[in-house]
Length: 212
Image (cartoon, rainbow, N blue to C red; front, side, top):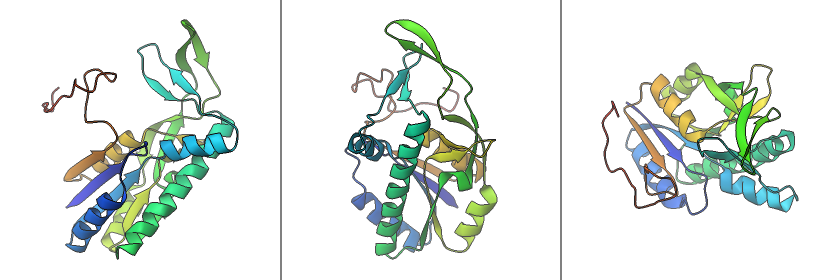
């Protein structure tokens, strides 16, 4: 059976203990794909290079990273650093892990226009390099898993014109789990769980059905 772990990239996510536990499970014979985020690393790198992170707020209140041409370069660099660090930590725990650039595994379609709200007014963003996932390189992942290698996947995708795109890491993990028919999908982040109100940490939904 295959399992997928999404390790959040936000501030406050403890990696070492999780990776140690993951290594123990892999050494016990389990097969895992590790997908990671890179938001905190990208924010830090953005500040260091003098190009602070900007966000978009959609009409329904969803907040996301504004990924213009400069930002996708910064995010790609940050994701690569996180990918290398996690792969090296797993190797240090005795795991044969390989870091994969997201575009090697994930295919997406660039969003041609994003409707957002700025200063209370609706705007349309057309220079954003974020995408909607359209496919997963399942064959590569299976080949690695069958060879006893743990894939470590960065949250980037390749667009239809071979451009790098920012994609939602949780959705990447979910799509990989679906395509691999994984037994388990675990998502670890710096929030307590699925919230009815993203601004209210007491609105945790402890359990819900597949239909919901």
